[in-house]
Image 1 (cartoon, rainbow, N blue to C red):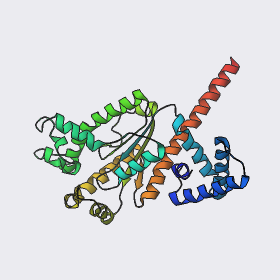
Image 2: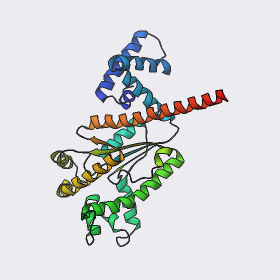
Image 3: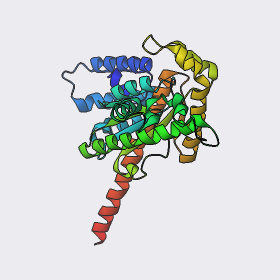
Image 4: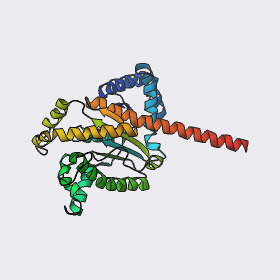
Length: 291
């Protein structure tokens, strides 16, 4: 029950506290067994009393996640060191999605398939891709952005292929990575999927630096700290694109809070989709009655 409540957007400590309230309320009824409908009714009753009707609505929306008519696809963009990989893993556990794909894995596949001479941009990290265009002028003379743009365009083809497969198989999917540039994917995707997009950022330079300092030995911090100006430049570029294309920008100052905000985006998308389905059903019924 605590996991279900937290999946609907509540902080984990509050979810556990309310699960205990639900347990005590069921114990007080002295009836056994308790069927699913009664358990759900008690949970909604406790949510309404302790949190409010909006929490009950989110709980309803979360329950609809396994009954969607289109696959749920979540795209979490962000530069190195903003915590998007951790968020993607936690989100997958909450919404029951088993496929989480980083765009860096797609870049690795491209790097192993195409030589440096054929596709040089994918042979560098996103913040080092300027080396692929070192001899040519970049975006407004900026080779950091020009190299990244070339790399993102190459990776986008792989992202599209993965999304197409998810749509064909009608399975949920989370994709995370710096290469998810807002506005780069085909616009028709929104009509075929339950699409949720967010850009994860770290606002302060010192906070961003601290994220790298906390990394383990497999991803040495020194390399990222040296490239922090380039990484911050890429973040500014992604924020600019997100604002142009209406993608939510979420500051990851607190992992729990940011996870709750991403969950809210997911549940809001599900709720709006349900309202659209209801409206379509009413139109069909009304048209049939008139006919």
